[in-house]
Image 1 (cartoon, one colour):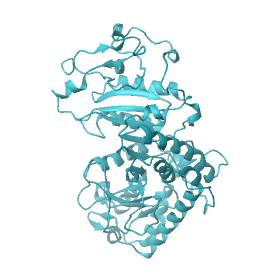
Image 2 (tube, rainbow, N blue to C red):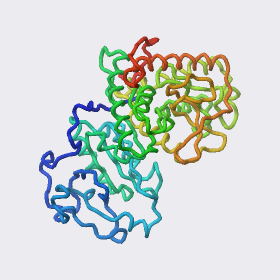
Image 3 (cartoon, rainbow, N blue to C red):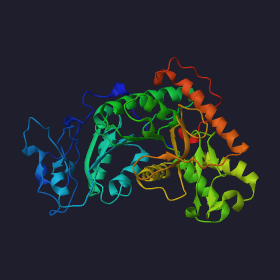
Length: 440
């Protein structure tokens, strides 16, 4: 899976927000332009930012410059026009504005994801959204470009956009946090090294979420190694329910569904009840025992058990590597789609009898999997952002053996980041290098 590069906390500025001196060759006269360049507003309790809307939908917006010049800095573009959302809600059936924070927002995955979020595809056609985009010092100019493209896309539901490099500023009041940004694995780097480097990033982001985000923020960790990064993040956010943290394994589930559909000669929508167990690594376990095709157990439709145990599992695990060989880069668009799927699975009721995969906190799980790690398991949701683990699951010796291997790996990773979770001195004795190709 692709990862986007972000800076460590030491690169943040005091405010974390873009200063007017950093914008060059941009118009300073908003009233002379119908569409200008973007500049983020500082966080204030009442600041509201509008996208392009029909004149009869909102009150006439006033340029920020018309207000007290000492209270607000110079501002550019349609996202810096103020409007009264509350008054608008009185005449429209829109829901309350939600705040979605995205780290690694200047990267390729985010480039596909942000426009899906802004269009209404993810949260619905009546859900206004505020995007809070986190980047690094070196990606700041690219982040401005992302904001300009969002501006030019004229999404009516996109009411606010802010950018910055300080997670404490960007995560303010976030109700969803999509943590994509992470450092990629460099040449010669061991998995233990990547765990430490990225773990520091997610420890800091966990602290920021704990300090300023909504108390019920939902967090989806994409940056790899995502399971242990999610564990580090939740351990550094004790005021947020551990259940609210997810590690993205939905792309692995989607890949498994694809391979089962191809083998059975059916379309994707005929495949259901697919679980990815364990870590987002080559120890992950695509579960064919409980999966179904046209409502029938997969093992009754695809009777080649050897193919299921060997070729199917290997294809799912190595799909990202094959894609890199074909295209020369890791998956970005399909990763973005899987993030969308993961969110929609939490905000849409799960179809009766089906479930979805997500890396979640194991404490209290009904399967006997070791507690206090983040492990991908089958989940159901009522569509309220929460989930419950599926209890009616079948196991056999093959499935248990594979699950135990992924469990052992995650327990070893946990010991390797003990210094980042407040559990003592780190001891790295990883069972082997199981890094997926997309992490390199």
